[in-house]
Structure formats: structure tokens, C-alpha cells
Amino acid sequence: MAYFTRARFVTLAVAAVGAGLFWALGLPLPFLFGPMCACLVAALLGARMQGAGQLGVAARTVLGLAVGASITPEVVDRLPSMAASLALVPLYVFLIGAIGVPYFRHVAKFDLPTSYYSAMPGGMQDMIVFGEVAGANVRALSLVQATRVLTIVTVAPFLLINYYGIAFVNPVGARAADLPVSEILIMIAAALVGWKGGERIGLFGAAIIGPMVVAAVLSLTGILVDRPPREAVLASQFLIGMSVGVYYVGVTLKELRHIVIVGMAFVLLLAVLAAAFTEVVVLTGLAPAVDAFLAFAPGGQAEMAIIAIVAGADLGYVVTHHLARMVLVIVAAPAVAALAKIRPRKISEEP
Image 1 (tube, rainbow, N blue to C red):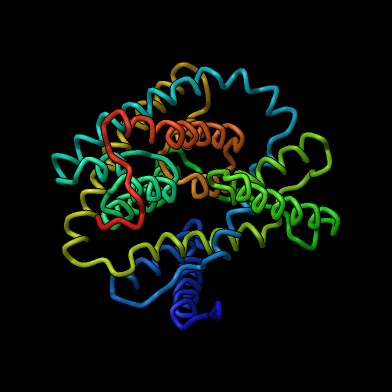
Image 2: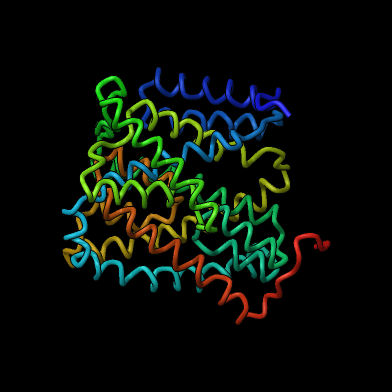
């Protein structure tokens, strides 16, 4: 099947219009929010659209490279100083589950598997896969997880601008023309080896984590000294924003009234919890306010990495905390589900 199907061409065109409109209006993060909002509106209006497929997955390798290149010997030396705030992550995840599971059971009226995996703040794709195996309502679970990411990614920059005074003027990277060709080739090789190698060994989030690990090794050994070029980072923003918006294709009015609104209300509960942990970190002097806010914002790892880069936050600190949260959820979620007697099933079984 050809990659550029009619639906995918329409999606790219809608995303491009959104990016152009946001850029012309001078709105923040136009290459992320423009495609995301335009595709969201088009999806709710009933447009037939399609995600970017493997190209969208490849876009995440750019963020993995950006994070890995930021892990320098200086960042490693600072890891012990992050230990205290990292120790808060398990409590944070526990409280999210303790609030979220009863909320989805009694407010949204979901069954137990759907409630459990809707509440878990792990990687969106991973939670959907685990939930499907556990017999969850995949449609409801997908919408709740997509709504969590969409809402956090939308609200976080607004708070950073209006509450923390962040201007989003930090350069996302040097122009490709200003980087040595050898450096760009090293990045391409690191992205491919990390991504495909990670997939081969079954690494969760291989498109981000694999390139991040390879780039970190190259950075720590002095082989890689630059982040990915500006053009690559902007392209990754475009494709990731488009992918989030496309998740709402086919949403019915009933689903919008019930599942999406319930999901947005849950994000408000998460926001209160995240704000409390941010205050604890700031008041105890463990991290500056912006770094703490982004580290405990329960959004998607890729999206929060983009915001951290543009906001000029401590990328190493922010991503380390998101990785800790994701690893904890992904490792612990199936075990806790088993204790809760959520029975796994084969994907081929009828729900």
C-alpha cells in the first residue's frame, strides 16, 4: 500500500495549515500546537484522516537524540542531587492510581481493567497495549489517554507563560547548515541503531529511549557534541502534534460528552496533585520551579521533552523524572493488575 494515502495527504495538509496559522498569529509552539489543534478540529468535524505511521515514530528518535546529547558528564555528576526528588516519583504514581481508579470506576462507570489503565500515567501506547491484553475497553482507554496528553500539552505552556513568565524563545537547536556533516551522520546512525536495536530487544518506547541511550553514550565519550538540527526538531514537533490530534478521528458526540469530558476532569485532578509535588520540590530547594513543574507534569514524555527544550529548562532533570515515572508504571502496572485480579486475555478473544 502506498504511504501517501488520500487520508494521510489530507491529514498532512490540515496539519500544515494549522502550523502556518499558529506561526502567522505568533502563538507559542506553532509547529506542535498548530498541527495538533487543526487535526483535532478536523477529526471532530468528521474528516477522514490518518496518522504519520512509521514517519511519526521516526520523529520521536529526534527527541531521543536531543535528550541523549544533553546527558553530559556534568549531568551525570548531578544525579545524586536528583535522588531526593526522584524518590517522590513512586509516591506520586501511587497517589495517581489511588485517585484515578476509583474515579473512573464510580464517575465514568468503566470496568476495572479500563479504569486501572486509564488512570495509569505511563506511555500512552504502552497503557493501551496492556489494557487491551487485560480486556479493557480499548476505545475508551485510548480516548482517556489521548485526552490526558492533549490537555497537559495544551495547559502546560499556558501556565509557563502566564505563571512562570517563560517566553519560549530558547533556540531548539542550530541550523543544519551550521553543523558539521560528520555530526549529522553520527546522529542519523545513532537514531537508527538505537531505534531498531531497541525494537529488536523489546525495549519500551524504543523510538525515544533507544536513540537517547546511544546518544548519551556518544555524548559522555565526547563523540557527539551537538543536539539535532533545528529543522529536525521542528519536523518532530509537527508530526507528534499531528499524531495527537488524529487520535480523535471518529469520536462520536456521545463519546465527546462522556469519555473525553471525564478524561479532562481527571487531568484537572492530576494537575492539583502535580502542583502539590512541584511545591514540595521547590520549597525544599530540590529544583527550580520550572524544572519541577515540567518534571511532575503527567504528560507524554515526547511532548514534555519538546516543551522543556523550548522553555530552556534543565532537560536532563525533566526527562530523568519522566523516565522514572514511565519505567515504574510500565514495570509495576501488570504486576498490580494481577494482584487486583484483572485477568489477561488473548488479543484475538472477543471483549
